[in-house]
Length: 539
Image 1 (spheres, helix red, strand yellow):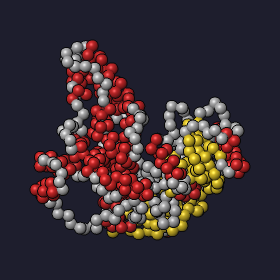
Image 2 (cartoon, rainbow, N blue to C red):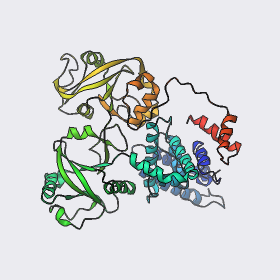
Image 3 (tube, rainbow, N blue to C red):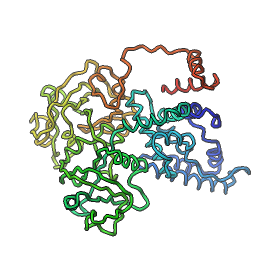
């Protein structure tokens, strides 16, 4: 089917059925096992799915290991006369990962993805090997998130990639609307902003020295430290931010240092990957020994608190979650959070007391004077945010924040003595659910993918307060009509079909007739195959 002219339909069908990746990638493996290479093969496959190793390293390591095993097998007589040494394809490697965990990984084929990628994003990336695998998985994950926001009942990244294949085919049939679609997409896309992080090792007055230059000249260049070989922003995001500036869209850069230092909100005037020529706008302390791979021209410094930053922004790739300022990514791509967030609170025995008192409470430090991220998160909740109360294996209540966090001692002096007495309290209005939602009703794969309140196996962590991504909230929305009615509407969610509306599935003959009436040059056999694949996937 790979050579069939029906680009979107056949490729989506191949994708749903496991992908067509060529026998030459694996016919030599049984012979290698016979020649004593079984242990090495098992270790190579085991390493490919090891979550403790970066995906790009896994992909490259797997392909290199299999090539070495091929060489050893051939030397031992494990190759037939017409067999040649090959480097395992990226497509075959991606197929293994996608089959292992389709909630995290997807299949890959440049010829089948390129058209859709360039329609949705930008020219095909120049990355190769493992780096390209990471890039493609990120792209398909963003597609999956967008589909979930629209209420499409996709199950995993393979479903999302099948949508991409079909979208490319549909675009071919309706190319006359391309310009109008691009304009509409640009108009509705959320504005990207950046968080630029700085460290004390480059100077305690980093932000202040830039502000001095901006006060004197109106603007200042901020350099992001990096390597000459690796860009700090992808080409598509760089172009997108450039386009925002050219269109006059207000774009901000937030300068964030250590937690006890103030944050500065600044306006972005320009962005460059090359060192600027107007050196008077670059602070004089910049060490010549460091390479700066991204330059941001800033203006209008306004001081914010760390809490204000965390309340107002969210990762552009994971709407609903809070920022993680401790990771190595710099700068962070962010967007402004306008709609209420949804949070998950693990209450256990404290549920009854907190419900009766109308509050949430977490200590600031434990007995060893250490803080916890899931305690600190309480101060990032805003008025109007929604909280799901989990206790005894179920989501038992939904509450709405009526007062943001303030300092308060432990509500019940006799309970929770393992905690310190000083803490933060949030006032909320509780509403019990008539039909509680068991955590087991939430698909395990979605729990594992979400992280946050869930561990790597999908179980509930022993933490307290966690933000939920909009994509995960939409999963919950579809599981409980009662709960869904109490959740805030996201700006990116289309109103779903009214719960209770009965859908009568047409028979195959009706489907085939409807498809052919649209003028599509499909055989009934192709329609039947794709129909069966959709039904088997639950897409």
